[in-house]
Image (cartoon, rainbow, N blue to C red; front, side, top):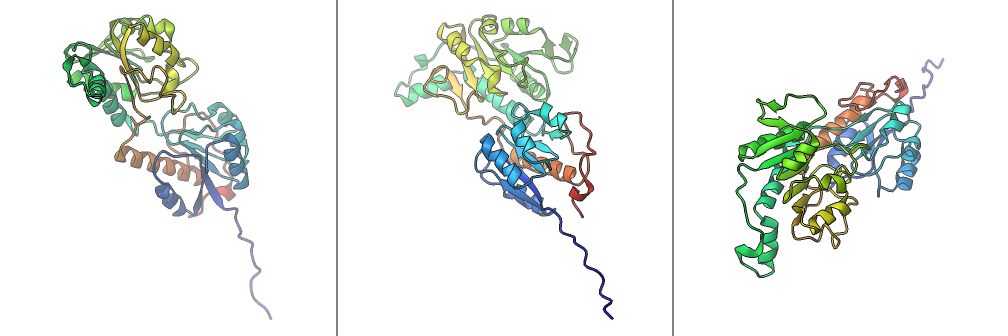
Length: 346
């Protein structure tokens, strides 16, 4: 008599995660971390909507990780099994968060991974502008070794830095600016006393900040309310001879208006780490102006920040696929839509 137990079909749909793009040499760290939990990483060859939607559908992905590529409704809806969108970064302007909410898909980010790096980059740009480093560099490389190659210099200590947006990065910038003897003004949506004695920061309105600051640095998210917050009208309120620094999002600045403000002499210079589009047209104003320092969206970058970003983003994905609530969910969603058959088995 055959006492062999009946065969049970244990075949499960492979769990796959799509990464749309990345700003580092390879994705071996992500692949290893996911593979350790029997999750396969699928890497998109480019960030085009048609490519991402096609891959999300073909591989029936359970989650999407995105750096800068746009995660649109077409991409989100391409895989009915998609249960999580993880932003490899802070800002969310490349992800349709509202559509994710309608689909009850949580969106996560890593909001504090590069605060120190962006603050350091911001201060480096302030110092470079204030000491004519960009102008002197271009002049000496062109053969002019003369202190008269740039405009007259002023002592930085005692001058004023205005911080638009006083979140985590803004606070880090304030601490470093104060250490260099700079007076710090800030605007914030969170009500605060006019003078914060613990941080040495004076909180003012945006108009007051623009009119009083020698250096205006942007640390705002890009939203419909903040898009082109630096425009012709706001630039007209800048203190004559001021500098603009943007290490946040390119869309905060109307670059055509900035070029005009530089051309008419209202601004003394600018430092731009983020642009619209990226890469920008470097032969066009304001990028070709010798008073403008341009860096290639590098403020976030360090070996330490990348390790932290990549590790934490993968951990968020694995938490979600294990049926848990991942860290740093940015939208209000019910997490009950992860079916038991899709939860990672340990």
